[in-house]
Length: 384
Image: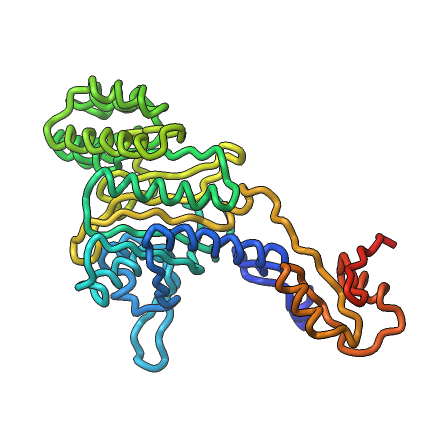
């Protein structure tokens, strides 16, 4: 392209894309279905803004997201602002300020767009993604963790996503062991990399007095019941054992609500859980192997216990069955308004002519309609 040629108006920055009619409508309808399930369990919707002052948005739980946030200066106040890379910290702020005096447990839901500097965590190239989720603030219990899982499972089932797997981990467990081991900074860094790679040989080399414990934890991963049985045999100091016991209790509480759901456990996994303080989870569909969402336990802005899960509607609806598209009915010019209204009430999509046409059927096909209204009947259009 020469220097005097303008780029195509369809060209967008890397990681940003237009969502065209069918995909946009599918996501909008599906997100509303998710929110309706959340609401039926008492989760009330909040809508935080896209932009906040940097020191507010990236304070508290949001501090761990600072590297993912786009920043700009507010020309009015001359203060730095940031685009939200995640909605959860905003919900935590709302709970700690505007809803500080609301009765607990406080159940909140949300849906909206977020923008990321890069999207390595989500495992895709998109930098603007949709989020929809729930946060349960107040109680710090395995039952609260299990409620979040069961509500999300029901919501995913409502939009047709089946064969779910919830993968649970306890990010504070390994750091707790390492902190008490008295390792040098270099050994600690090397050990964290070895655990990240699940490299037992490197763990043995750098783990010092906790090497065998960590190797045993590496082996205690997989199907929840088998993993927890193996975890129960590992000798752990008191604080680490408390984390292990909570993981076990949470699995039991989930199993009581969802006896047939697939649950896996990895007590060593800690990647991506930057502001979480307890049990964390990732939900997958076994039909696509794509991450549908993640969440877990954290501390809200005023140190209040909280647990939540954020879904990625884009991934959710790729895993869902194809959406049934309502019949698209062409209304020739002059169609009775009462008939048109009745068709819409019955669930049809109507496309009305705005001027008299010489060939209504040809115009209907041109506009992508599947039927044409004729007096009080619908006539299917045969492909030309």
